Length: 226
Image (cartoon, rainbow, N blue to C red; front, side):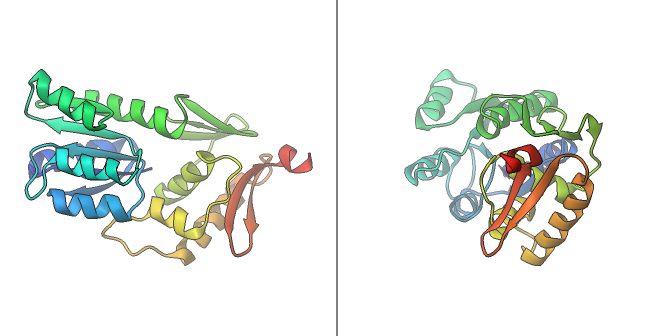
């Protein structure tokens, strides 16, 4: 899953990004509010982590613009301001959670996982498609109870597909979940990842169906027969 981290304190941003990548997330890292607003208006994320004290546009302004565009993306606010009024203000603007600095990275990871559970899996810890099961806490896939070994890009593609059961996903939608801001999105690469995933899913009762001109659908074989 792809998340946006916006923090202007560079050492802290680097530490947070490293921690998030350590739990298997793809992280885009920005350092000012204008860049964050642009990214949030043009890219697809599973979660945004916003510092309040940002240059050019502060975190409150970025959040306000996001909600004015009708986006319900979960947002975790980071701030050195510990006052209740600031927390209340952020929550009233549409923030989903609030973490005051200094904080432990383990607490940040726990809050991120909780927000992703609610937004991506509807509050559930696990998502299933036939014999394929995904555990958001461990970020692991199992197929017929056997651990599925995936590269980070294969993982991102499969996460995007299992989170949207019964929905055809275009190459462009999948690319938006796989490639960061500093990478060139490639539909050809998505075809390669899907091809690899098909091989790894063989014999497990789950397949990826191609809908020509539309995209791909993750499907349990038993469902296809009904």
